[in-house]
Image 1 (cartoon, rainbow, N blue to C red):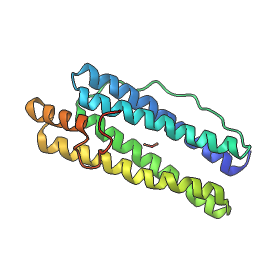
Image 2 (image 1 turned 45 degrees about the vertical axis):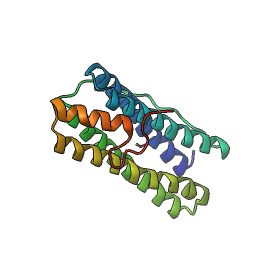
Image 3 (image 1 turned 135 degrees about the vertical axis):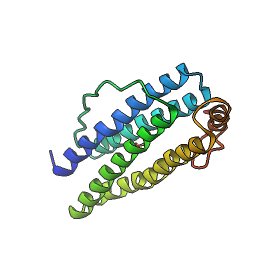
Length: 170
Ligand code: FEO
């Protein structure tokens, strides 16, 4: 297995972990009567699975070997919604750093197909970090309990939070 293929396979563990962690967060949010946040987080989890599949499909298209990773049990319990999104931001920064490393490797090896495929991820990570920061900012403004939290929950459902453009799934 080439260095690039191995590195892409290593990265898969981050995307699958994000899918698993965000799915657990969606469950926690649903159980805490926050349907707007829960719906948003389910959509985010689905995006992470799509990211993993994008890399798997790329490897298959190039006749390279995808190796699916083991996934750790997600945390599943959080002190607050703010903590959930701080954890999302930390995870997204880790994914961004990994993508940037992959991009540099593709440049170093003059692997043009990998470099072009990774450009999509570089842009996606800018959006994902911005989304997490925007939600954290909104939660800090509105407060983490009571009417303020309910307001942000409604905003999440309607896609009104800056950086959160998805809105409810169709
Ligand atoms: Fe696929 Fe949010 O990183």
